[in-house]
Length: 278
Image (tube, rainbow, N blue to C red; front, side):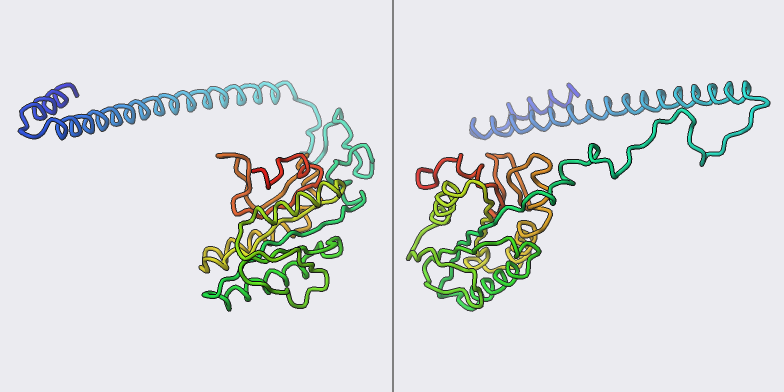
């Protein structure tokens, strides 16, 4: 290893090239050599760990066999117990009807279902107007046919760039039109609503794919919609102590739902920084 390193150093010194290039080449070689050494050391440690694990498993197996042989040898004259027979000293399993054994998640449906308001950020440009309308119609159908439609009070939407009215949607309410703007405008509307309705839930969605129509955006949009409008997202999430729900969650670089589709408790939303100040 050290002989190879010496050859590389001598080669770099005698190389008739600008000093900057020699430094770059020498540094690259050093990094490659260091990475190789670390890789070989990792393989060595992994091999030793594997040998140790196999040795421990073998000793454990021998101990179990010895104990089993001793118990069989001391059990002469006893009536053998069938595997299907439970041990006599086994504690009684809790009856599923016992109320004290039911989980919080199981009782969630028995609680009063919270009203849900959807906040929908829409955008259509003139270049992809037909594709944009198809996406809006698809999302409206998903909402109206979702398993939680009986709990949705209203679908409040904002329009950017192109003024429009969502067709065949009796519970849709237009919050306003903006010639230009980003999702923070709809976020602010949702924040203000939660300040006045802390006991409700909200869902935030947007017309993903109308700005960049592509197959990947279509797949993600449908997955996001199915998750935030699922029954489980609104009946089981709080049973696990969750006040938000979505298809994907990431703590980096800050806690958020990639794709920006989510459902949340208004009690949580109203504690956040107002979007207008972000």
